[in-house]
Structures are given as C-alpha cells and as structure tokens.
Amino acid sequence: MEIRFDNQTVLVTGASRGIGEAIAHHFADSGAKVIVHYNNNKARAENVLSNLSGEGHYILQANLSNPESLQRLIQLVEKKSGSLDVLVNNAGVYEEINWETLDFENWQKAWQRTIDTNLSGVANLSFLAAKLMEKNGGGKIVNISSRGAFRGEPTAPAYGASKAGLNALGQSMAKALAPRNIFVYTIAPGWVDTDMAVEGMQNAGAQSIKDQSPLRRIATPDEIAKAAVFLASGVEYMTGCILDVNGASYLRT
Image (cartoon, rainbow, N blue to C red; front, top):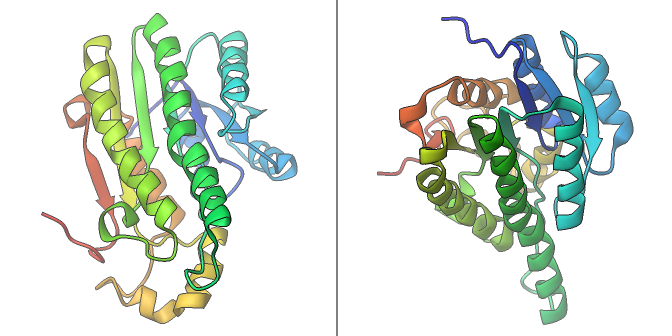
C-alpha cells in the first residue's frame, strides 16, 4: 500500500539533520509539502531543503524553548501554507551530567535547558499546532520520544524525565483532541545512527550498545521515519499509542 500526503503540509522540527532530516525526506517523497524547522544551523536546513523531492517546501527557524518564538513559527505556517496537517515533534536536546563533579547550580541549569526544549517546547508547539489544525478540520501529531523514558537515563536524568513526560503528554492530548479530529502518536526509538549518537556510543562502547539488540545493530534514521509516516497516514485508532522502535533492545509489557 502506497502512503501519500499530496496537498498536505507537514512541519518537522529539528529537520536539519539525523532523524528529522530522514522524516522530512520520507514525507516529501510521499507528496507532502514539508516545512523544515531548525534552530541554529540554517546552512544545514537549506541543504536538506534543496534535496527534498517535490515542490512547495520551505524552512523556518524557531527556538523551541521560547514560547514567543513558537507563536511566530505557527503564525508564519498559517500565513505561508494556510493550514497544517501533520506536526512531527522531533527536535530535542540530550545533555549528560557527571554526578561526581556536578554542583546544584549546574544541575538546575541542565535540568531547565532540557525540560524547556524537550517537554515544555513540545507542549507549547503542539497546543499552537492543534489550534491551527482544528481550524481546518483536524490533523496528526507525531512525537519522537525515547526508550530512555522507560529504562532510565542515569547520566542524562533530565532527558529521561523529559521523554517520560512527553509520553504522558501525548496520551493526554490524544484523549483531549480526538473529538476535534486530531490524533496524537508517539514513537520511542532506542539508539539511532545519527550524529548525536556517535559520541555517546564511543563513550559507552559502540559494540556493547549494538549488542543490546538481537539484531546486533542500531536503528537507521529511515526506520524511524517510516514509522512516523505510517502513524501519520490515517491509523486513527492508534491515537495515544507509544510505538517502540528499538530492535527488541528493551521490551516492556
């Protein structure tokens, strides 16, 4: 079955690299008009944009931790596209801490930076996007969470907490927004072969991380992208789901 998003507008946050870049390409290949969001790296976002198939794509900048920046983002989406059919909340930050040397002041800063982007930013953008979607009859929201929401992140506790909060946020919004024809899904990947994962894998031991899965490898960005496209394709009765894409590296019941 071919999945198509012809004449639909899709906003992908953090689309200048990694999972977000792959998601942008898969939606574009399916006929969507893709909005490539970035925060700091305009050059990379422009490179992604130039390589997308189809027409009608554009880039927009916004700082997810800044509510006013997100308001401007959605206002620009409405002005340029008129509507929004799919939001993919992919952008996020991952910050490790050293329990031996970290003081309370820097603990607070690291916690706040992560929560402001990964949880509060996603909540604010989802709220604004849902209001725009409702004007046009509905839409889909796909959140990119993490296996770390379930198994814990001892060296990045704020990250794990933010993703656990994102899971709960997605389920709450799924219940609240279904009567408005807006459906919310969450994907929880394990390790994915992206730039951001390289350093962490080196520190923890690349082969030991791969061996966590019986497939003896980590996921490709394309595998996460395919899951995002599938969920946004119209599987309405899966709203509220949390879809594990971790190669059986962490199984939960």
